[in-house]
Length: 210
Image (cartoon, rainbow, N blue to C red):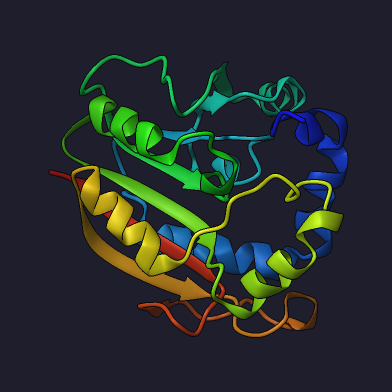
């Protein structure tokens, strides 16, 4: 099954997760805000329905799922249909790129990062938000992966593993943040964002093109 098919078939169910788990979602947003540049030409790769792009003020990006594209456009966003492995942007045309829970659905992470490197301006940033496979939530996702609509065909990464891939694709790690401490369904407040990794399940890496 193509990795985009669940998002075409179950776009509403995917978005409902963020409504049901709104405190976890807002915690993730706060962690991303710490790393995301406040100005410049910024895109989201894997923009989905615009769940993150909207609150973060990002208007453009790419998305392979037609159902998600439709939902993003209905929110006034301007995404293009495409994949991270073949970005429809000119060389050195973007100041920053954001990816949130997108890396686990890539067909080729190395090709994707090389493409992002190509489209970023010199000194541009790649910001990645993801669930660390070695964290409590990551281990739970892996344990129930085969039963999940969305994660059945996903590939999860650990933070150190992802940092090594970024370095191998000519990115320098600038900052790392973490949030989501404990079980998602037990979160009672918007959680703090801490520097580093190893305790939180949701990690944000800010890397710079070198």
